[in-house]
Image (cartoon, rainbow, N blue to C red):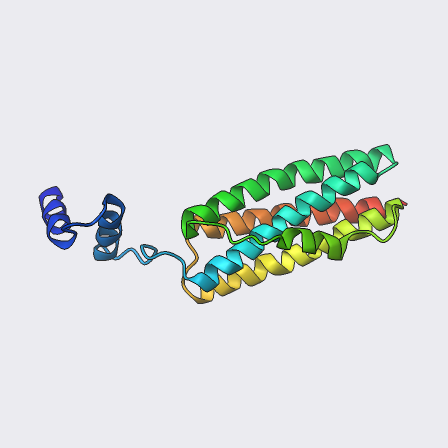
Length: 180
């Protein structure tokens, strides 16, 4: 098999770069993920990352603005977990698309969901609203990529795991709001 693969690569990729040789091999062996994501998918994935980054920024701001120690710790937990989520998502998108197409969208999202006042109820409600919006964007991203047959196993796992974490965040925030 190695002889066949090497001969194929040599014939099919004369003058190609090493990374192109891997794409040719993957296509030849039937890997449907060998071609890069299309521009629309990369824009959608970049929007997904912007939402995850907005979660981090809003939870961190709410952490700083919280006067209640229990909620202060809750928001700290949320922004620390969101920090890991955004890093994982951004690295995955760069790996699949070659770059992130962020244009400050995350700050626009934070502004849209920012609390109108600094009361603990407003802080909790703003975080809940953004977590709910994130669930919608996660589903839209997943469904769109699946429909286009561009969802990789790793991307499937990432979106599902991050949506699950978001559901936990929603539960914790809703419980804190009920306790007021």
